[in-house]
Image (cartoon, rainbow, N blue to C red; front, side, top):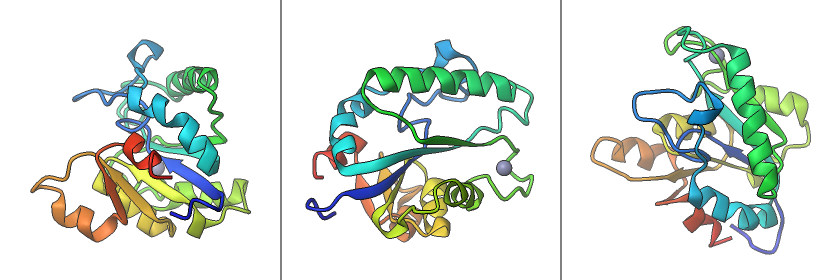
Length: 181
Ligand SMILES: [Zn+2]
């Protein structure tokens, strides 16, 4: 990354990047949303580097009937409030509510949420943007969306090949990456 020029848009996966991923469960209520400490610490560094922040999140809990779209919107209103209190304004949050295997065009790694973002923000400079996530699916989404990709988390025997194929940058945490900007 070139530290002398402002970067454009940071595309963020939600669970495991911004908030703590619940093991075997979904964030269905505000009480289940716990922001990650390393993300909060990265905010000033990220704000200095990027001019726009967009969340792209798969929430098949909606299609599974575990929660409603309104529940997810309520969680996101709370998320926006909490992040605002830490100095970060989200420009947009895009949600795929569909089941894995439903064949929709918006569930990552399909690029539908990127197309929506380009409709809403036609001046996005993809080459100067970045997709950050903690799964191979996020990295494939970035590839399909024409974005450079940052994988955060552990590279294991299970994900090594896919991460090597789809991630441009790998860091243990978003904070550690942000400290290089
Ligand atoms: Zn979808």
